[in-house]
Length: 170
Image (tube, rainbow, N blue to C red; front, side, top):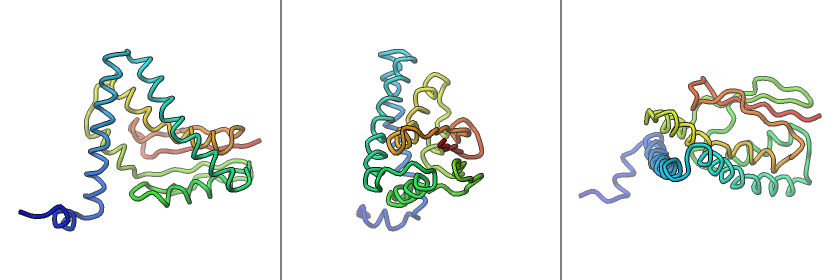
């Protein structure tokens, strides 16, 4: 019988990544089902949103403080790229769609988490709860610069061709 190491060596990096995210999504779906059944849709969404937002708000704030609390979109985007590059198997923003001095729109077209979520064909109420797991993007941005407008304008989990984000400062 093959050891765990031998089994892992036979997997490509992509296969390993898919397995990891599938396991993660199994947990997300299970917890979301429990919240949905116990609390109802609105409260479940509220709690998942708050938990995910809070989980990343502090990280965004900590990152900004280390950089001297910059307020411009270029510093935000650079810090985001660097933070995401440190996490294995998390896609870094793949394309800048628009960039001006005070505004940046960027997108990513590949996300193993959204692939694993969409593969489950969840019913609408459960999907509405599960999709809030991605709220961490908003939390990180708010922690980095609470004055920056941050909006997800496209979302892979909703069937769009990418997750696309708008960041703007005045």
